[in-house]
Length: 336
Figure 1: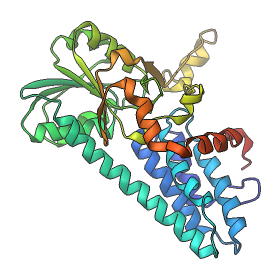
Figure 2 (figure 1 turned 120 degrees about the vertical axis):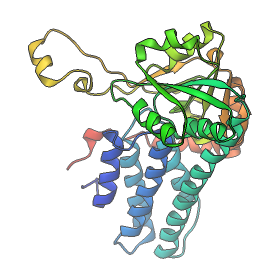
Figure 3 (figure 1 turned 135 degrees about the vertical axis):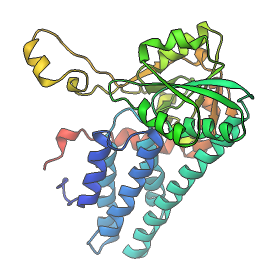
Figure 4 (figure 1 turned 90 degrees about the horizontal axis):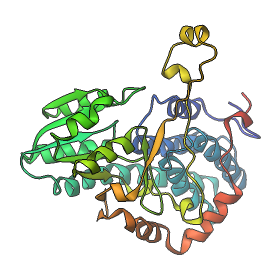
C-alpha cells in the first residue's frame, strides 16, 4: 500500500482493513489495534533519518484514522501515540522508534486495565437479583456484567441481537461462556422485555462534550424504552472514547455502511427503486443516561466536560489545533 511518499507495511494495511470492514469491532478493541498498527509501522520503518521517520508516522497515522469515521477511540488512540512523538526532540532514529513502540504498548496496557476497572466500578451499581439488558457488543459493558455475575448479583441478562451485523450474538456468547443466564431477543422486542428488566448496561463508541453518547444504532431506542419504564441506564466507557473535538462544536460523523448488510445483491437488483439506508450509530441524549462508568469513576453524563478537561488540560488547544490542520484523510485519497 503506497501513501504519498511511503510504503505501508502489509500488517498495518491488514489491521486498517479489518477495522474498516468490522472484522475488528468494538471501540476499545479498535483503539488497541490502532495503537498496535502504529507499533508495527515503527518497527518496520526502513529509513535512516528521524525527520523522515516522523513524516512517515504522520502519514501512517492519518491512514489508520481514516478507517472508521465515528468511533473516536481510534483517532484518540492514534493521537495518544503521535502527540508524544511530536512533542520530543530525538537524537537518533532508534530513540524515536523505541519511543513509539513504548508509547503504543503503554496505551494498549492502559486500555486493558481500564476495562477491568470499569467492571469493578460498574458492578457496584448492580444489586443482588438484578435482571439486566444490554445492546450490541461492548467489552466494557461485558466486564461490568461479568464482574457483577461473579459477585452473585446478576440473575439474568437479555441480550438484543443487534442487526444488521448481529453483534449481540458475540455478547451473548461471551456472557454465556462466563456462566451468565442469557436470553437472546429480537431488536424489535425491546419495549416488551424492558418491563422485566432492572437495569440496562451498554457501551459507547463516542461520548461527546455535553454527555450524549454515540453508540450502535438502536441504543437510543433502548434508552427511550428504559426511560419510559423507569429503568436505570448505565453507559460503560473508557475515557479515551470521550471526544475533545466536540468541545469546539465539531460534530460526530455518523457512519453509513453498505446496504448489502441489510439485503442481498439480488434483492437490490429486483427492487431498483428502493433506496436502502444503513446508518451504523445513533445518538442517545444525556437526559436518558443515569451515569457513565469510566475507569476514573462513575459520573453523571453532564460531567463529561470535566473528564475532557482532566484528560487534555492545557494540551487541549494544541491538540485541537493540530487535528484541525490534519483532518482525517478520506480513503479515496490513498492510491493502491
